[in-house]
Length: 260
Image (cartoon, rainbow, N blue to C red; front, side, top):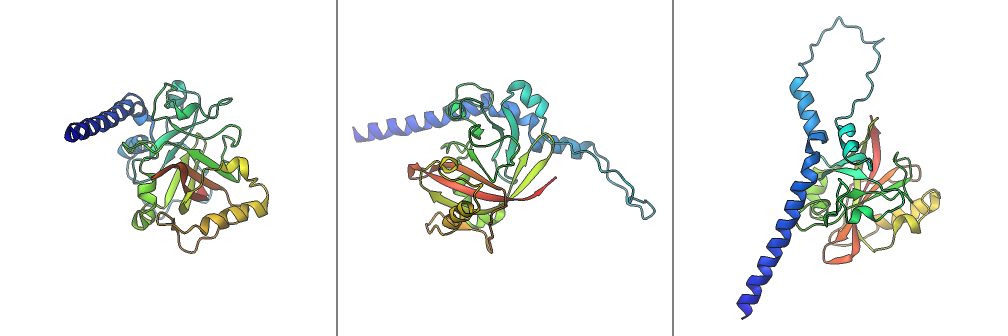
């Protein structure tokens, strides 16, 4: 009888994972042709190699306007709530980023097409963050899915010191520019709502919060060497459920280092 019950539980778990994968195929994969990897690959394939010439005078050259590798026109035709793309180079974490005015919790239960889906989507809250990443701290939420979708790999990657060093950058693509963030900390954290409990426009509050993050001592906590975070920095926080305690959070913190 026990063996029958165990077999049933294993089949049930496998079925849940199967459903998650089917949901991915029916939603996220439809956006692959608009992703930065896809469009960058097409650009690389069609752009002829540059020719070096010592006689070319580039002193008066006019810089080219930014062209995003993400096809935002295609994305927003599908769902106008898509306003950015989040990519962690070298990993499978590469998804549209959404925000729903009037319903911050909408993308907990809806995918990037706006359809009901247990995977949800990556999103920010309209009541707390603008669409320009101009806030001192921007928090991006995503489910920890057992299939690895959304932020399902986040804790596995960033609680491993080797992976932490291997994937040091998070890139946010916007229609008119791209933002590069350097990861400086990944920590387990309690379940308080960060942006509703801390006024990061206050320099002392900003400093105290991140001093607290850098002081976390836990097996899952990992930090970049010689980390310096100070008021005036723009910080991106990725937030998902903590493995082993889904009422708490796992945070990956990165600060803006460059924008193009």
